[in-house]
Length: 362
Image (cartoon, rainbow, N blue to C red):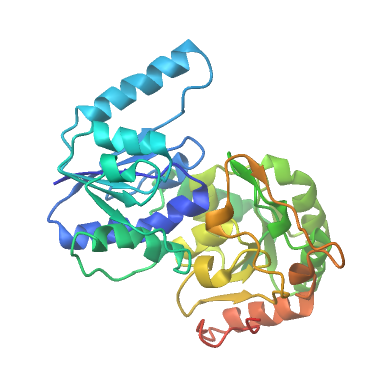
């Protein structure tokens, strides 16, 4: 069975699709799965044992050579004789792309040109967890599949790199990863998802005498990461901008707990099996937080939230807090003491369930 998944990004969204790959393995014998993915998120799929091909979609910007490459890859897709296309993008262009495959089953979300381009459509249910919403595309075909959680394979090269880095490090276990950034994607910017750097630094300062803090981030987050690393003391390991996505995944897999905003490191950590403490504000953890008893979140939304909802996100839209008085109260109500308590519980192996949140909903 030849199957094409179409989901470009962001990195977190790509991670949310991984339970769908696991489900495809259970309902089809030896499926051959290709994934059309964007260049930003593609590295996180490297080494995935259940993917036959990762087809990188760069779009049509960047000159004639880039356009020719993209068009060539589209032709390759249209000629690949897919038995099933799972379209997880909602734009009309990708609906036309799915129609061009002439696959006998093309499943995606309602709206735009879906009625004429797809054979099966499902509602884009904003009240469901994002992993469940992607699984709905397979359920539309009559398969009763369950959510097994996020899954990510580690490459051997990335694991060796991380092992060497930790061997040279001054500190030892337990390793607590802190990722103070996130919220920047190719089409949307939502810096309002970030808990204050000063709060992360206070957490790192409290941890410095009982754990090794590993700071994780991109080059664009260097200032925030440096502040957290300084607070964590000389034994801190600041990997900001030094690791690619596969190496970041390998590093998070070696940590005992990962603390992060609603961002790629949080979901990558969950996918490699590391307990997480997620800090949520304008996004709804009931729809996006990692699932399972080793993952906990903190969320104290004011009456105005959650405001960053998936049905409202538009292309190239910069999210800003519209609360004129006491902006970002949803994040500022979460104190370092609460985060430290959550870390201690995670380190102690205390299981957690979303039905009894670490910090109440509403």
